[in-house]
Image (cartoon, rainbow, N blue to C red; front, side, top):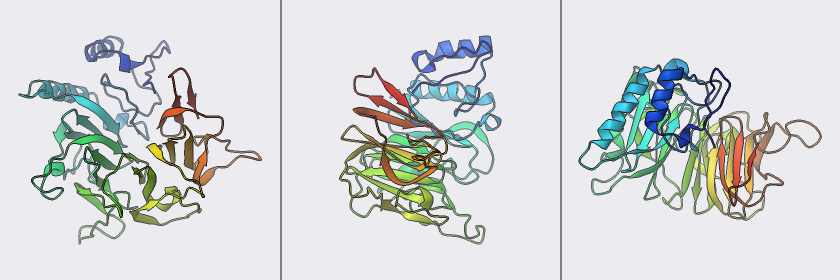
Length: 339
């Protein structure tokens, strides 16, 4: 997936192929602006942005000062005794997270619901490390936490470490963090959130292969099986739920099929999973045909309650969901498909 930037000349660029310095110079010189994309208004890093799940145009929350803060973080990591670098980025509605080659996670933005991984009631452009990920509350002192992937929902985040453990924090009103959050006199029922990362417990094992966040739900791949938690509408249970939620990971209903999944990705309200048979299976809202089938007509559907195969799509090796669309890459890299 390519990150495209709209310019006055309506020309598009793939910034992932440019150096950080070149991008900084071009932004300053041409005053590029981000159009109606799912990426906030700050300078992108020279990364492959396949994990980004921006649900809205968040320009109002991230003024240009974030560029300087981000550049400062880059320099700080580079000048450490053991130089580090940013290898991943994820975007929520009002917060941004970065993970590094050494397994650390930094955040900035608005954290009124714990999105930043620490208590913060005001917006911050400072990229701060999420120290709670490495505390006794999350893991025993002798256990190393090295995050290899992060994913953001609207107002929550999950992190996957190299030991297959999943940690979550932020908005938990729909159970999207994968655990119960105790209410206090400062929190009314239904206004639950966590400012600190906590471990997500699975019934069978802690070894998780992949994770992804939707708007108000989360999905994980556990030994090839799909599990989901949060807003019940999007848990792939084969039913049309009008409300309710689950804080416990539930196995996704595969309608009698025996499948092994390698990767999962979420949009705002839909999910796509790449299976070992080279096929893609989707469920959730399909109002923009993001699940790979018509939204209207005799064979159309606006909502898929359980995973369904995306037809005429074979030999898929990667799949990425945007807010309201999906992209698949087939073996050989010569053909990509967009839904």
